[in-house]
Amino acid sequence: MMLLPVEVSKLVLANGGESAEFGVGLLLMTIVTFLILFGILSKFAIGPTMTVLKRREEQIKEAIDSAKRERSEAEKLLADQKVAISQARQEAMEQVRKTQADMEKFREELMGKARKEAEDLKAESRQLIEGERAKAVTELRAEAAKLSILVAEKLLNEKLDDGKHQALAQQFVSELSKKPTA
Image (cartoon, rainbow, N blue to C red; front, side, top):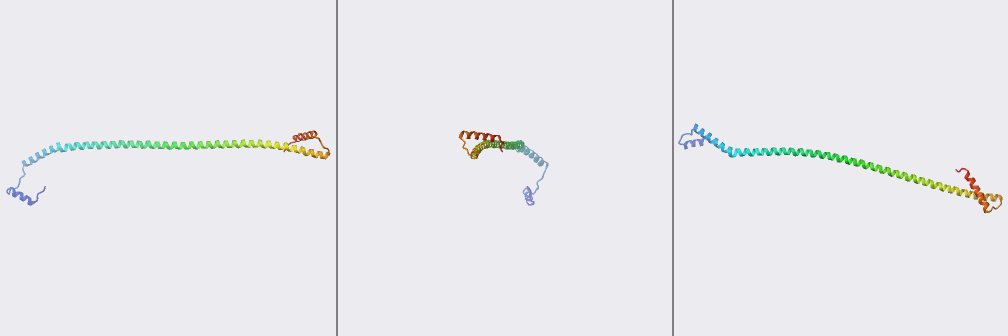
């Protein structure tokens, strides 16, 4: 605290006009008082405050270490997650490829079945056509035989009986069978 000149003059007048002197005794007393006060403050204020500060410093260090460990664990988990995502993507891609391969195989099987059915149907149709052709040829030969008999009958003006008619027709058909067909 700083005293103003007016206050100093009042202080001097209050002491009977004499100014206060600073001596060795006052200096020793001030040092002793300071040391006692420092000892009391050290024991009751500075010591506990330093203890609290040291505890707080340790807690902060532990919190920092814990945060570093947690960050390390989080980075490890993130790396694990990235690996898991990568594996999941690879598995999904493999599943898609497998599904595409299965679909291609299924399509090929269906195409094979369709081709086989078409070939079977074609073969069956050929057999049916051959059977119908043979039947038509036989019917045509029989008709040709009948027509030739009628023509021969008219030419000869002679009426043949059924037995002769059948024999002549059989002969004609056998002759037609021997000739190559177109």
